[in-house]
Amino acid sequence: MENGPQVVMSLGELNRFLDEQFPQVAGEFSVTEVAPMRLVTKAHVADKHLRPGGTVSGPTMFALADVSVYLAILAMIGPKALAVTTNCAIDFMRKPAAATDLHAETRILKLGKVLAVGDVLIWSEGDTRPVARASLTYSIPPDR
Amino acid sequence: MENGPQVVMSLGELNRFLDEQFPQVAGEFSVTEVAPMRLVTKAHVADKHLRPGGTVSGPTMFALADVSVYLAILAMIGPKALAVTTNCAIDFMRKPAAATDLHAETRILKLGKVLAVGDVLIWSEGDTRPVARASLTYSIPPDR
Amino acid sequence: MENGPQVVMSLGELNRFLDEQFPQVAGEFSVTEVAPMRLVTKAHVADKHLRPGGTVSGPTMFALADVSVYLAILAMIGPKALAVTTNCAIDFMRKPAAATDLHAETRILKLGKVLAVGDVLIWSEGDTRPVARASLTYSIPPDR
Amino acid sequence: MENGPQVVMSLGELNRFLDEQFPQVAGEFSVTEVAPMRLVTKAHVADKHLRPGGTVSGPTMFALADVSVYLAILAMIGPKALAVTTNCAIDFMRKPAAATDLHAETRILKLGKVLAVGDVLIWSEGDTRPVARASLTYSIPPDR
Image 1: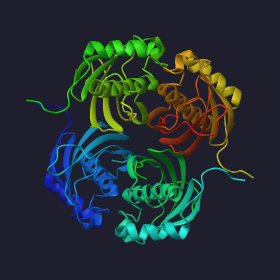
Image 2: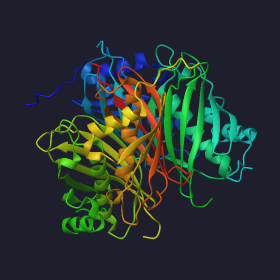
Image 3: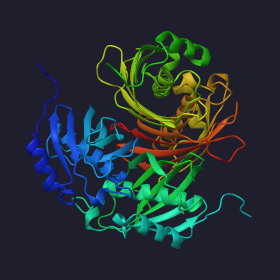
Image 4: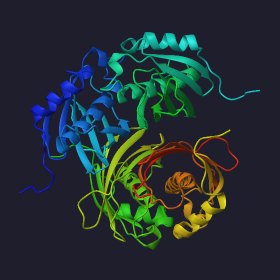
């Protein structure tokens, strides 16, 4: 039996929170799986995410990694927090498949009172080799 | 007299290149100064770059840092190269001013045959404290 | 049956290579497991690795991550290459246990002709929570 | 007249603090200049810092960057704080000169109540091209 930290937001709650709080990116990202300290997300790739040759842009992958760690943290601590990204290190390892959705698998490695750290692997749909990896730190405000 | 590497693209050429090669972000970023191994850029902040509270989003700052180092490299090696970002480390240090343009100052620290490294400081217009810093590595294809 | 890239150096060969090529750190680190694109290493913590309070120093954890990715690459491409670290991002997430050995688990995420990328999780012996994570890029010289 | 934050530890106090608090690295590093939000340090390179070919090791450069940002923070907030590194991103850009001392110039970019961020450029003595750059985040404990 699992006695570690538990998820406090469901898949539906996470996706509703995303659409309501981030209307600028509504429809671009969605959560497809949630588990304690883990989250899987999807980027619905459209024309505006592409670069010459059809490849998905770096900022789109950064945005996917950023929102993924944010939602993985909220899944554990609830939607009240105004966590902010303090740091991201991202490696772009392969060219994403042209005009293809991306999947991201996120692990929360530390969930402290002040700082949370997660890492993310990103794949193009239909290919098992990661196109990017990222690690992010979020600062969690004291008033939660 | 300066005998180091010289700029091979003018301000006008860099801005035209940006608009033609990256129509998805046309009008969002522009180059305002160029010098050997240095470049200053501006992000013309609009609604789509904002997060709740009017703050400029992390992906916008990442995109600004990424395009800035890219253009600073091209200013030195010319527009032929298809350089790709391999790595970025970015620190978000302060909340950007609400709905305010950003400026980025870029230094190229290494311009090798295979890899180039630059770093970037980002400010909100009208404030001298940096809101973000980033360092990026670009891989330069051998066929240039 | 596994048809991906295979290990070309055994555990014994990796440890001998480490002792012979890096006499300055002989006895400080050892490889305890090797598999395709994966490696487990150990830091034999001694007085010189400690900081006030008995905690293992940051540079010791950096050195462990660095040598781990290096050896994980050599396990796949052989001992000839003079790969050099071009980049490391490391997060220190918890204070390591006082005066306790560290274990590191390394994954190679990209093994290209020019660049290789790996990430590392580090634990104190006897505790399952990671104390640090790191990602590193190595440049692989063309003459291999 | 400068009305920003002022230095609260002198060069002598910083070097004494370093020797007393970090006896494991006594004599390896020293502070050579201090100013508000800026610090210059030196690594006294010896055999134990070298790798095959006489080059200074990556962990030595990491340690120099780490101690430099630490001391630059203490110069501003005093010796009481037990600040800890939470994150470092480091780029190794050129091979350091063989068996030659290193100099590091550090800027504090953010000095907040909870987090401080600094960046560092490292040179081999007698060469103006940077061999490495690093950015580090320190967590500052609340009880200061």
